[in-house]
Length: 65
Image (cartoon, rainbow, N blue to C red):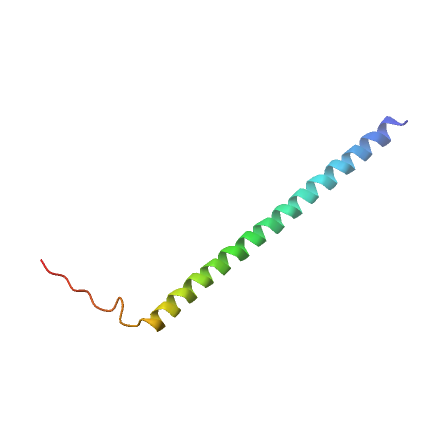
């Protein structure tokens, strides 16, 4: 076997693995961002829904000293 050809093949395999890992990391980051945005949207909609069901809660503060 030719050592130069083996070295080139090994280099190509390492590059393919590095690129695959980088693409997977990008996909995971995108998924995490989407999940965070969805969680935020659900939290906001829950607050709006709660306020529409009980609009009197949280509007007055009765403080006695």
